[in-house]
Length: 344
Ligand SMILES: Cc1nc2ccc(C(=O)N[C@]34C[C@H]5C[C@H](C[C@H](C5)C3)C4)cc2n2c(-c3ccccc3Cl)nnc12
Ligand SMILES: [Mg+2]
Ligand SMILES: [Zn+2]
Image (cartoon, rainbow, N blue to C red; front, side):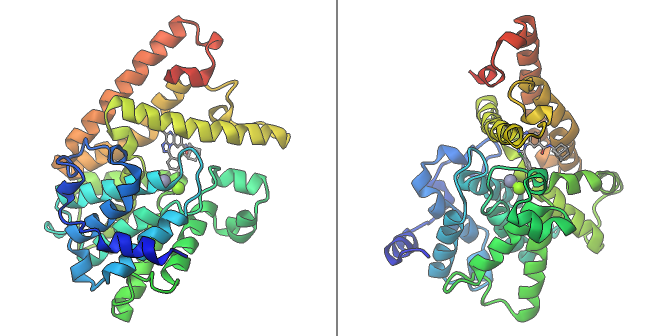
């Protein structure tokens, strides 16, 4: 429930061209959180407009304004998985649509473009800063609802998205013909579920096969694989930005991990090393995450879309910085340095 004046104010914002937010708003290296926080909803509206989605799908501006404000309200405030993350992920999807010309090159159609941007904005709705395995271990309500199908949090994020769309005056898909409406919701569901990294890892071999054999837009399986890859690329995009920004994002992720580890200890469970502030050596864990998960994603993106190679290059540069940090810390015998202090 968003106030009338908030909606009217956002609606009245002449969102105009995205250049209003930054002259480098459409550059890969642009860090969306550099824009002051109160302007993020207007920037989201501008992205929908700039991609031609408002016009193409007859979205009422006041409906889009109410929808974005409801989505912002739908996020809690854990260190990392808050609205600033959702806004950043949506911005990276915007960058891919824009800079890779995914619609112009007919890799995606308009409906997929609308689904991708909307899925990114909604993909972590109502996140509590804890993982799927923690839901099951702590017997949370969400686990009781969703653990049989796996991806507990991601199923909840999708359910929250549907709730917002069904709220009066917030349904940005209301003007879609029934067939498109159903298809769009199906794609948003698949895209949000794809942000479960366990699912991503399980399709890596198929993604590699698609990247080496070449993307065939005529094959429905290829289109769904591309949706998944684009979602993961957007979800991890903090790691593709300049070193200080990506280091700061990692710090927030580990703040979430360590508070989950603290809760697991209180529950009498042993947290994994990644979640345990006493055991974790962050530079090493970050190198592992980049090598095993992030770098392969951007390497695949680079081989499918040459214009994305600089994103892969920056992620590789960040990995080198983590390697330097690991060398320095282990020389300085990291054990006497509180693991979270490596960020300072
Ligand atoms: C900087 C950074 N580091 C990260 C280090 C590790 C992991 C992580 O989930 N690892 C795995 C490692 C294996 C196989 C699966 C399931 C589990 C066991 C846990 C994944 C995520 C990290 N991550 C994310 C992120 C992206 C999507 C969802 C949640 C998050 Cl937190 N966004 N930024 C970061
Ligand atoms: Mg998530
Ligand atoms: Zn996310």
